[in-house]
Length: 352
Ligand code: MRU
Image 1 (cartoon, rainbow, N blue to C red):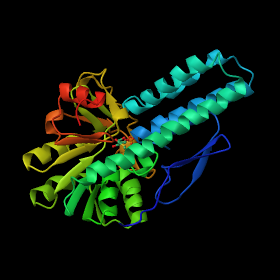
Image 2: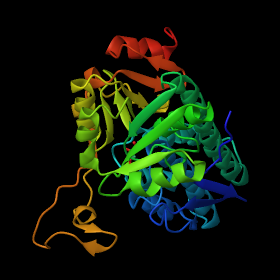
Image 3: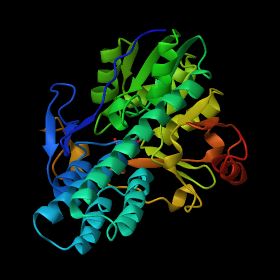
């Protein structure tokens, strides 16, 4: 077994939250303290922290920070509703944020009359830490199940950043790649640069360099050519939300890859923890898709790359229909036949 590093995107010390500023990577490793819940909401919105599981975790810590703030400022606990709303009102697509905050809110309704103010702050930090740790263990388990699907020698294409930086650590799709490499498999990763935020170029490539995993960075529009030449054996991506019927919202560009995979008959895997499933949303087209500022497309590294007069479209995610997905890898096992009934049974633990 190869020994890998343990990259973590956040740390908590003495009830203070520090995050690795993902806007500065790979050039600078800057840690920022987020000391108010408004700071946390802004960090999520501005993508200082990003990735579906990580924004859920950071959102949960944000609520704990908000409760601490209300108590310090002598404000009534009823204002916690505003904290919740502010944190929810940051990024609309990844369901993990809403999942984590709904879990925290249920605790708030129970604990607000049971605990002293001091106990409350400690209890919310502890709950956020639980969510954080559960995610880490889920990722290791996804890696374990997923790496079995990776051939002993494989060229793997991935999109966006689904690694340690998008989660509590290890990662989902990149976690599977990590686990396969840790097992000693001979893999090469093809990393889509992932315009416009460049999660692939800036973050995935940075993680792969840290681990010494062989990789090539490719432009997003290279995938079709590489696949048509038979250079890619497997495609693996993460997810921001998986609906009841198995449709997947993930970083814009994922859908295109799934169509290529189908056309060229190569496996297309989605790796995600079960916290990414949203059974209340029936199908992909019902998922709210975040549209971000056009300047993210019109500028790169602060430099204008298009005429000021040109308007740009900046949808952050797209929908991959269940039928294009070979299997969904979760911490509880693998869903091979993706349909509403199977997903429901799988999540209830009725099928493995
Ligand atoms: O806009 P981002 O960077 O938050 O989008 C991230 C992705 O789309 C990831 O693929 C997804 O969150 C899965 S991360 C484990």
